[in-house]
Length: 158
Image (cartoon, rainbow, N blue to C red; front, side):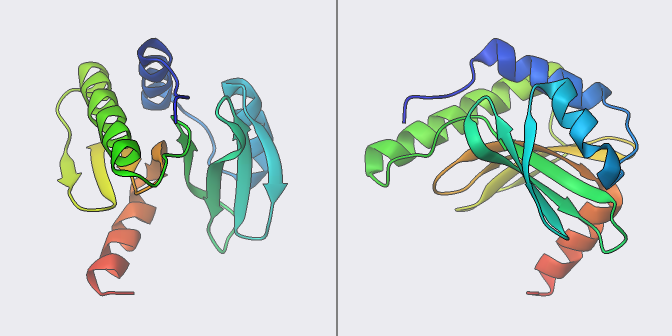
């Protein structure tokens, strides 16, 4: 993996997510995507995928049963090689991007360690999320009501 958005682009994306005010309605997703330079390339009943600067289907969107967007995330790097070197590079990107996000947002409100690590910056209505799994680093925005339900479900093993 050698592809990633540079620190300036990443910081700008974090800043834009922090300042984002929009409807969270599924019917407004195309306009939101266009504003960020993304494209909706697939849409199902409860999900959509986005083409972002990282390529085709490198963004994900989830909808509630009522049709509202609950959260979205976009890749900030290419997929890591399934090697020790690839995983180290992925962790380096996650660490670097966490520093860049902290410079824009201040100290995180929570950190979730583990194989699927996550760092969060909670605002009044939404939370910016930097996530790392074993293949990818993503940056996302979630409604706080969705995230509370999500966290409860995870805590219950659901």
